Length: 292
Image 1 (cartoon, rainbow, N blue to C red):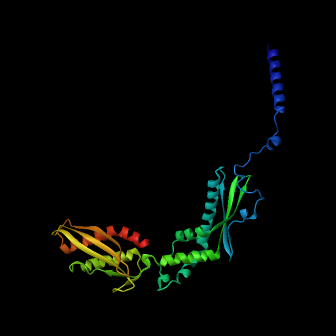
Image 2 (cartoon, helix red, strand yellow):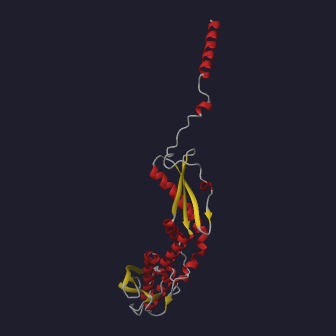
Image 3 (cartoon, rainbow, N blue to C red):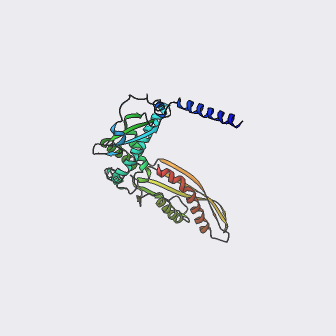
């Protein structure tokens, strides 16, 4: 019985060895490589030198390269590679030219270009990327990756910077302002004036004139007391208007205001609390308008 079992075991080993000898070798299998799903997107060509060149900055142009992995969805694959390239271009541009933007801004009239506020990097990137050009694309069939090359000329970049600088100079926050509080109750006018000066400073306005000027905008603050409980609370409204030099209202808002005291307080102190409360509530929406 043991002899029969040993014989059957030897037969099994020989059969397994024979069957293994008939399997294709690794060198044969390697000849059957799968095709890349996007190798027919573009005309086949050897690997271009720009694929490995990285970022290039010259006196004539800025250049970068982006990539995306192939999925077989041609439009999506190309868009991803292009976006990758433009994103990298935006990064090198912000590094290379941000420090020089203020020089461009200084050429716009009435001293506006000398404002301390800077052009936001996001604005530069948006403007630059609109004018950048995808100059070439290539598919690497081995890694199944799409590469895209993007360029922008220095002349296009300068034009974009000038356009952004001009738009920045026209922003509301860079205009001259006269703060008008003349419509307030004389008992509260100085309180409104003080609070108005604080909020205008917080907004980042750097050009404030002391009297009405034909070329200046106006920002009017008017506080009205609507309900008063002597020594306890005061309710009111803070009306804010922005007028352009032609005296047309370009923005306005009425903000509720409330002053409360848990101990006896003068009506003037309650009014101060209400005005400060109204200014705090007003600040976010007013800031949003000035930042446009």
